[in-house]
Length: 322
Image (tube, rainbow, N blue to C red; front, side, top):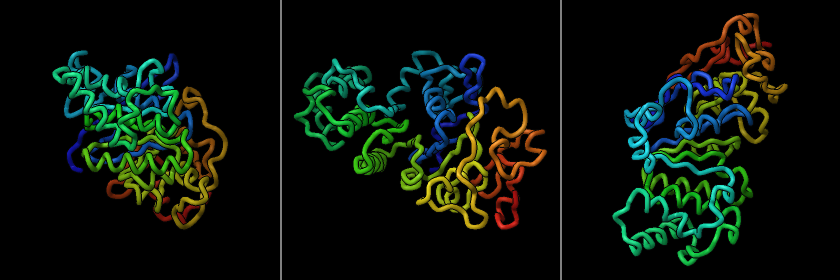
């Protein structure tokens, strides 16, 4: 996984006068699963849509195989769409109720593989349905005839029928029953291994994130506050926000030493943070420097980055006190 597939640099997205994504930078390698976690309203889904240019950032770059998706001509962007696919949170709302399942899955083939005749296209649709655990005989039915888990399988089938290089899963299992979540996660892992695709997996379910991730990004108020290999993040989290997120889920183990409390308070509006660390009002370890200057994202261990003025202390939690 040393081949960088996606390179995001200094990305910023504004909604009116509000900055909702602020200076986000990271790399995603071919075949890698990179998870993005954070509270609701932290900007996770907005980041996903900005990467796909479903909304237009005001700053930064998104390079996919060396092509900047934010500045390339429309025709070049359209050509890349087959390699960049997304699975949405609400499985039923993401499907057109007027189209049969076969038409939904076959539409990407009509757009990107126009040379396929109707018979070949139908065969590919049926094969893809069976690959995601549905009967090929269901191709003539409509979305309202399926359960939520089945609709999500249909959404996944639509996304992978072109065998994309990058699949973005935006809370793809959060609306499903726990037993169904496990089935969908295992399906995604099987498809990833079979197709060699990379995944950007957005979730607030830390147990699921730990199960399938290679690395994890932690986002707070539109900024990345920690980036780490999965095991390192769960065993030795550095940023107070990450530690609080893990401590708020009793069955997820976190670093030994001084236990962090559940995430205190509520997220502020980004524009209310004029300077300093955005998390300082909720952080039990904040110092005067946290109000004076914003901490940069620095490497505190190989491959482990954190944006905290006290990150060097967090490597030895027993020495840290509020």
